[in-house]
Length: 445
Image (cartoon, rainbow, N blue to C red; front, side, top):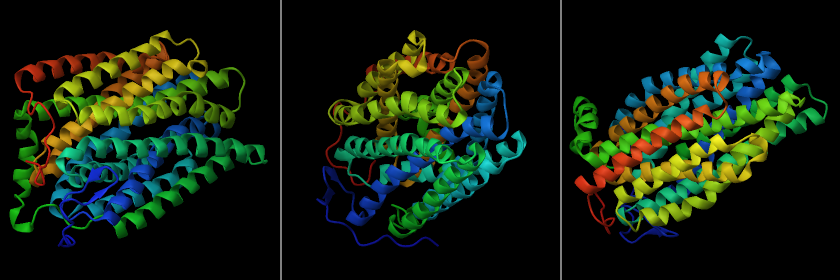
């Protein structure tokens, strides 16, 4: 049985500029901020580690790594698809804390196993274990973003959490990505360096799981007698899409998770492949690619996110979504102008702005529209739509990466983003919702 919620916080309680919902303590909020920093950063290390393992451990030819990476991502998302729905139900039935901590622990186990794979099949199996972990961890993180703030602070909460997401991503891709090169420079073999780097990340996952078990608010935001049956919760996730704004949030999720995975996976692969074709060793190539592509894009998104959060808290959220998805389309389509991914910083800035804009708009919209008692399963469906987007972009994009051009996965996302932006314009005129974000809403509908 779920733990009962802690004593109710004062209605005006806040951390910095985020007003907290009743029952959320300052300690809960500080642990959430750490979780925002650690969770997304730690899960992105797989994008740095995969090209490294493919080259240094398994000897996969560079000309085949686009397809192999796309297939690994595809199986990763199949596992996510199987887990996200049950995770959403569990979030609304037993609480967020347990699922979050277990998800990070499973991620740690997967990272510890990943560099010891001796075949592509074994690597795929470990990738699916990793996927089960991130399904639980990211599903709970997204639900906490909806649970913790008052309505007038949702955009700011997304911006604050997303800023810490970005700091975590930059820390991992630049810091831990560069650590692999440092190990090699100190005399380690490429394989030993990869194993040690992955074990360090595994330890950080397990430490984070322990902290979250202590500090995340226990229980659920709805008293037990108010919780609908499981079957009703699952059906409601689909039926809630009758609200055009939730349907739009689901469509945005298709882009917002896919563009993050495409950016993290194919930018580093593109840069690493280019560097290795110029004679660089896998360790140096992985570090350079992480800094020159994903690192620049993530840093740009980090700087842009507070601006996007302020916009989303001041304008109609559907209109803000239309603007955000337009920025995503522009950013990702700009990769058509790249000749060398390692020497195109301004274009990666545009990609980073587009990537974070989609994340901010989608997360703000779904957290504002999802009913409190059904929030976990609505967020679960939101995540499932993200998985579907990743399945499409990874399976198609990975093959186009090898057969057409490395920019292909980005062009695919840019084109789909333009279509979602048009859908947002349609919703703005037909079902815009409040013209300005609500001021106070403890129950969130």
